[in-house]
Image (tube, rainbow, N blue to C red; front, side, top):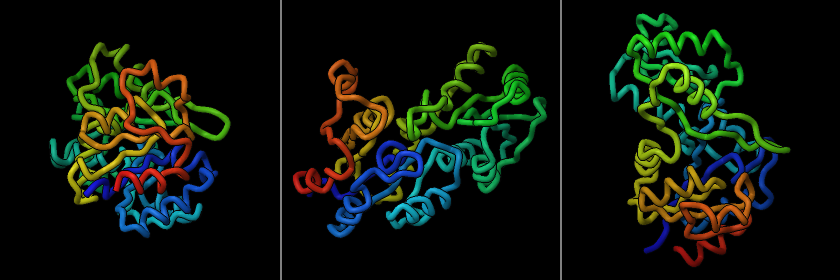
Length: 262
């Protein structure tokens, strides 16, 4: 048997902003009709898993909360396993904070009590937030991050992502982030494979980024499929250090490829 499950990136792969990638709904419906398992992955910690499922459903791709894995969920799992009930400070937006609290972690902004600093995509990042994180790390708090993305694709271009927050804290504290749990981390792979209940060799990762989606596939032994509907341009592939197994223009072409992989 070949590929029986798909991990589908969201931004740049299934949709761009509020616009569905043309044909993505039909492609996913066809994969499901064939009995393929589908899980959606996102490095963006700006929404809850229920929010992502609602957006997918609204755009014509029926989904439940259990169909979605994102970096906030993976981070909450990671911290809860590392130190149950840990005291955490996150530079992040409310959905990330809610995910951390749901995992039994204590949120605090007292630098003397903080055990973990979480750097994330935060459109409300301020000097005060950076200073709280800085003071905590200087006092010995562990420094982790949700995702490594430098930018996030949106309609009309890109916006700054979590890498900017990570870089600011690394530059000012002199400390390197010790764990980044979103794609291409093995922490995300583990959570996704647990959900699919399939071995790596039976799973394909489909995404628009060479440095996260394709790299994760390579490291984990998944089939790596790059879609050109997001941030990666065709001319970037040849000079890249990591190469996909397959390249498609958009998700609309995936059922044709699946017929060869299944």
